[in-house]
Length: 165
Image (cartoon, rainbow, N blue to C red; front, side, top):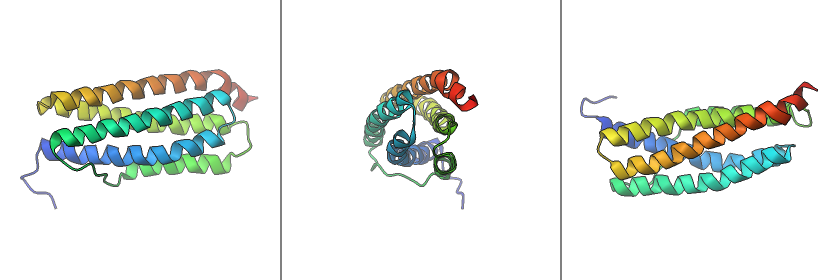
């Protein structure tokens, strides 16, 4: 039930909990994706992003601290759906030349979700006058954009050629 008392602060906190949950799920999924990847470059990209994601979780915990709130996740159906699609690809394309292309597509869907969330959170933090939070969220946003660029480069090079062969 919606109440008229809810405001941008509540929405900001809810969305923060949502992305916190999402990052924790991504931390669990990345090693499985790295293990499934046949390309060494793709595996390395997943492993690097796993390390980065740990730092992103820490930054989110800092944002919760700035708000004086406990760092708690809230089930995010969107990320669960995106990660389920990734699992499906791993099962259905195991041992095929198209597997890495599918893994890349799944990973980019994750990145695009994160980029949209962090962009929104950064904007709201700025509007709410939470300068330090906005800075932390922007650091993660830039990192996610870089990861997406890396995945795009991988996707257009070897992986897609292998899938087409």
